[in-house]
Length: 571
Image (tube, rainbow, N blue to C red; front, side, top):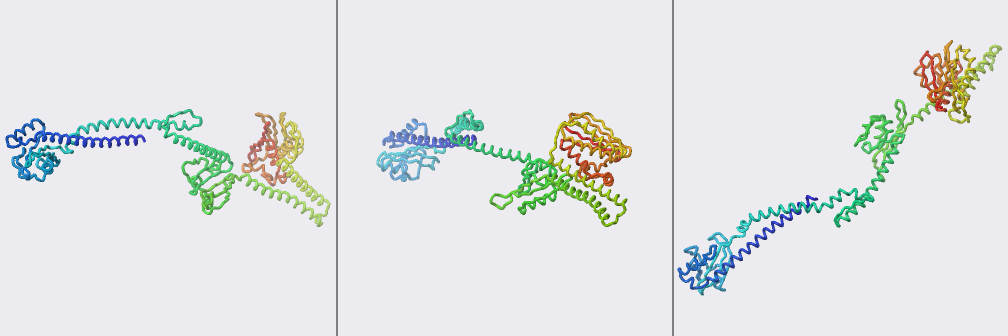
């Protein structure tokens, strides 16, 4: 704007100077011509005495007298009424007739005449003035008048110097003027943010004409700030919500370019280091053919689709929801929501396995009992010894069935907390001593030695649950031990925690089974479990009791080298 103002002022000044120069030349030329005319008229009037122009001697005397009194050349011509030239001071003989000259005609008619025209004789503008001396003769005087071009050419150097001077003055004047004109505007622009701040004390002096503009800008700035704040709040809320979502969130446009993605989305899709910058396509995030196929189908068919993906350790469910433009059947983009369904899937698998295991575990003893009972019923077993033998087997299977059902009920109560249990400070040493006494005879039967090394460790818990926990761990140590082996039980405090460590010298647990031994009905050696009467629920009960009191379980074991189970309870 400053440059425009500067150039405008400069252009106006140049145009004004040019017009002034032309007008000055024209005025000067008119003044010069009028002055020349007036001088010539005066000379003619003073010299128009007939006796001075009667003969050659008097004519020459008059001409010389006049020329001495002026500093320019004057042409003297005496013309007869018929147009013939009697005398001419510039030429001796003139054959050309002057009767049709305007000044000559005027002189014979009015007594005087004048004319300004270009003369071919002298190749210049000439001013002619004639007076009648008598009825037959006219005296005409003429002088050369410079043309306006000649006058302008004479004035041109002076005008050029004046023009340059004016140009320099105008340059600096326009520069200063434009700076002064724009100074309030520049100050207002620089301080605009401060001026628009609410409660600002900045006071900039501006032109009255700009006050409505300034007020309008303030109003617009306030509206824009309100709108921007609303957008920021909305953006922050959306970012906060999506950032804290457990579900993965991916927003795509109709070209499948990613508009937004949260941290969970990157993790679930398997590309945690993905950075969203500029325009990045979904193919840069994942190359999964199934996912890309579902995205294309959802965008193309405008349908909500669901797709489950199984990874190495997790199960994910993808929801593809097209984003439709308001009141138009046009898909603007796609919202991809990823849900971690690992827990649900694991629960379904566990329920399925549990149902199968329960059915199998219940069916086996029932089938045995029904088979033996049917044999007795049909009279296939009649002797007392056989009846006693098979009745004992039926009794054993029945007791195993009752034990299984009791373990299932106990595990269900522990897991679902449906049973009200009284919790109080218990001494783990006292409970462990009771369990060792209870399992003493069984250990002797397996030729296994029980070694207890317990400190007085107090914790708040239900004594029956702790008793069952210790019973199941020590019982497993006895049943899966070697002949002449041992089970070592240590109870002590460490780092503000109560620790129970049970180690045995038994057959151990192979590495491939270690992660599954706490599952219901899972047995490492199914044949031996059947022989020992195990239900496959003991360690599952141990796990849920430990979890009930925020405990952790750690297992160290290898095949044929024994097992060490460490349970740690926070005090």
